Length: 239
Image (cartoon, rainbow, N blue to C red; front, side):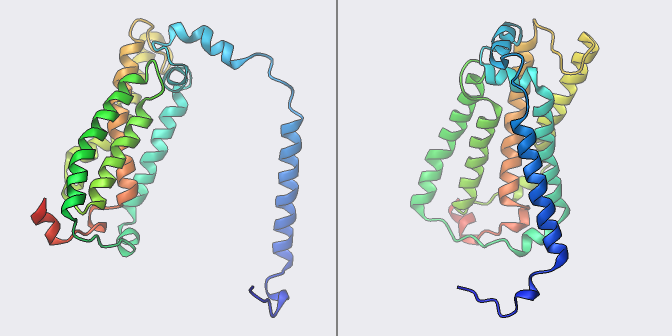
């Protein structure tokens, strides 16, 4: 157990005041939360009543891509900001990036077996999202995991990050989502209010683009920058 030789070195009046204010704020937020009146209506019933007009039969997808599409659009924007932050400070990621060992034949065979299967699963999750659990975020996470698996196996991924198509894939989902929102505003008068007869097709189009973008974004967040993931020359020979 660590001993404090001089307690006065860590105790000070500013720290005590910050602790006291934090405690008071936490107490006030808790009292406010418990004093809120009950909801005047059941949100679940409202969602089910509006579900026939959403374009999908899965209530989760209806909420994320139709009823509260603003939130989903902003979530993708936050992920993009995180990627831009990584690219803005390349030295910080290159300094702490570990070097990867040369892959073994067994690991390479496992990657060749699993990665195509993960792409297939991602496609299924994307398609099933309109009527069952799934959707763009789950499908994109599977794609991103496939890219991470390729990197951990020691296969080279650096050159993939240099192409313009990869940068386009990063922003594809957000830009398409934004474009559909402005198109819907021109057609219906409100941002992200889809025409009812085209809602299903538009949601599927948005989810397909988001799947690609989320997969690339998650892979970038894990891998950092291209130069931050050095690979042994033996990996290039075996691949």
